[in-house]
Length: 473
Image (tube, rainbow, N blue to C red; front, top):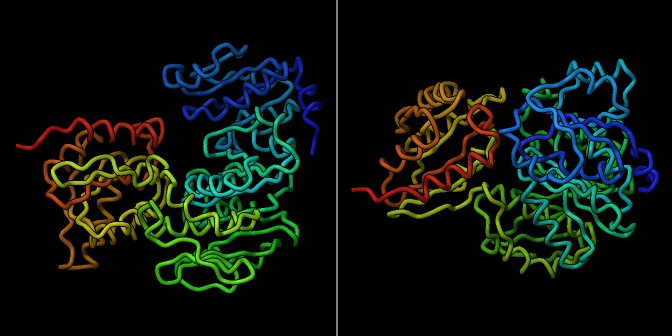
């Protein structure tokens, strides 16, 4: 671990470029940290200022130079240090400029790993990271108040480094991009969880093999005494366990485990202690869907690995507040329930959402295509969905998958397809056709970038539209 004081001194009076501010505000914590260290900070982003207003506002009062709507070569060839946002591809010509000029390239998460004195607990997966990280934080904080939660969940902990102690626990949500960058440090968290692996971000990682390698970085440099929490039900993960050096702990919703957390009847039980213990009932879980039972099982396993007794967990689980945009009940109107699942940016996430309901579903889907096949989703929509209202660039691809799915299921399918120009039109069409007892579900199976800045903006618009719906005559 590098002392914080030496890092602050290193950046003092240095010229530092941050590549990527982002509408999520992902670089705000880093920019504040560097400014407080006395660096001369330039933030450059290809998005224009009007798109980034919220992020710019959060840096009001800090001596930051903004270069927005463009990248200038001098901001990459002449600084003392370059920090890049996690999603910047390795073959970016601007990174090539920095390398050619000998400019050191770093990331916020790599910096945090070097400076953090506490024990890092890393959580990743294709789906469920934020829910699991949030619940794990709640379970652990209840017993160990000096627990810090941050990372890809949306909170930078760089500004808390002066308060984090050696015996503190630091729970981090980690994306595939962050894990890919961390490989340069040859370091993995001593307690690490991989919730699942499904196709995702193939537009950025270029292949499923590359994506898997990025996710496996969470375990790659563990020592034999470290702990690896693994989903025993995930087909891809089951083929990778021989490559995990840490001590393996499992969770499952499908089968009992000799050492792990799993479903037994109506209970989640743990065999991680001296004897099998019941932790909570499935009805205690205030989250919809079998995938969320798996997320809770994972959080229990992680928390127990951190030293939390299972006897303390049930009331925390019962009172857990669901994270927005994840099967979030928005309203009930004339017997029709509206759910916001805007976080579903892959077909697998939408499949999990569809499996959470037994009622008739009117599905709103579509958006930016990340290069993931829709075949299986098309078959499930053909079998389970009453009508699909399709929006965005991927609408025609999803429609083709549904039509192929209808051929496979034959007369079992009554799914209709309606193309809509945008989300407001899709909500209005679904509301017009919904009957009491139906579910109107926004679960796009795609990223939002063709029409929105991010999934949160998409979900917030859905909620506003639903709240403003009038009564039907």
